[in-house]
Image 1 (cartoon, rainbow, N blue to C red):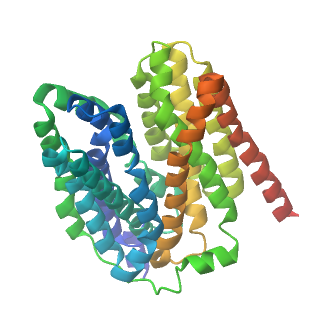
Image 2: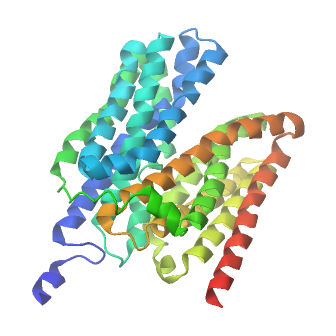
Image 3: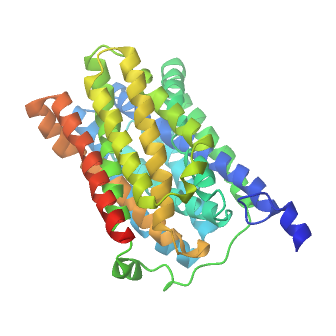
Length: 390
């Protein structure tokens, strides 16, 4: 036993798990790279002659299957197996984008492709993260899981630039073919991973999760983090453009901050109470959004992106770990699915009320008001921690 233990890398369940972790990180990055080629779909449809209303529908409809399929991805994974669900999700995500090669000039065809893509990424994301947790032990869990989860947003650092270059240089057909290549490369890697046992339905059921009451605080935090992230995703580009600033200044520093923090700075947070870590993440996230509201030059925009990325990096992986506390690895698909569905719903639901508020009050007041929810969350979590310690 001692000899076997000495061969097991720290933080991994066995010797093979480390190489699986590396492959899994590559799979997540490549699939997300294909999924995020959608950042310039508005331009594609505009050049195809679609109205602004039709483009808005096609952009927004992606969120419907994303949220619904995220909610039920845990049940699907428990029924058919984690790896089978991840494989199905990756296939749908990749072919959802690839199908736009033939459908992008048709509203109905584009609508169907977006439904396919949204459902696919939902079935891929939570189960693949759940599978990642089965390769890890509690030793270095937050650090390693944080690094794994950073693979999904990492393409934001250069994905939009690549997508824009491909489209404007080669046209829509070549763009959709080239954009699908990373996802196609990832697919065979999924068949190199070891399957795990299915969870019994009653172990990971949503009813028992809600009955336990332990998910209330993480779900509230997921709403706050999702709303702030959704605001940035929907409105930061027009905010920067309105001020004559480069969009890349904020988003590149945001993405690089996420990756750098999760690469090496999450280790010290392993032993700190989840409530306090998430509270700190909420404060830093709100500070980043406040800095963005006040940014009038590129250095301020870059600093805002870096701080916002720091807050997201502190909070998101710890939230994911928090909701899985006490749950066996093979049964984590359901709590992670519920977390993802809540997070995604907050991202998409914040857009409408925020746009109405912006029309009346302008960007800075609405951004600062949204940022203040991070402070409110922090106070709430610190009070909950204090009561627990008494």
